[in-house]
Length: 325
Image (cartoon, rainbow, N blue to C red; front, side, top):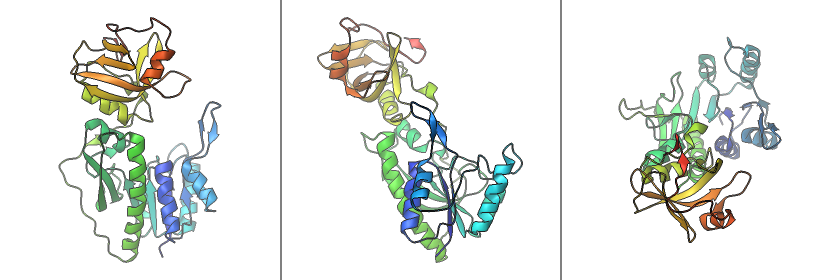
């Protein structure tokens, strides 16, 4: 069996680590990012991969960088020594979050395999799941890729498609893709051990870039078509959460649907009877699940009941990206 080093950080990667270990591959070293402050107390929290590695009794390293000529060169040197000592046949990478320099790519005899959550070359980059939903794609998937020094540009080894459902959020699609990626990387490792992987260059056409999600994108721009905003609500669940501003308060919108009504962008077309409907550039958006700061996600009817009388009424304007419109 191959010796498989692993590099990853979030839940998406932890699913793959579990599958690789369960398939019987030796995992001599796991790399993950340093603990990060999180939660209300902002205390350092271990990554999902660190938690799984510790539970499985695997050797762990948490370098701040892998660049031997950077500000954390000492960390990188320690990581290089640890990888050399682990003597992996291959390094599997899944949502690691650190750039792998040339020395890392060259160290394992079979190179580095990446689990990427799209059908490359579409949606190279940091946020392929969210951008696929936001763009209205009907299908996405997993690509197992031989890594090179480019950004998700290496040759493809295995691909598997996954439909995007009309009600998918980034969270629900993430979970299915994480499970698919875990299965596919195990298949790729078995194929690699048997010498049966056949790299295929990515097509020159059809490449798109999935830029990292920025919190500044959260505010809904009512000038956009309702269908675009409904997809954005799903794409930004669970992070950063689509939002609107009401009375100086930022309200998160977690579920929404398109309705066949017309009104000015940002105009409240309905604000009662359990419904909240807002005019958009084209059509209207019905807000189905909302959350006030410090509160929980609740249905629109419950949200309306909790508002002080007279807070909103049909004809009022809501603020989104760029302020009131």
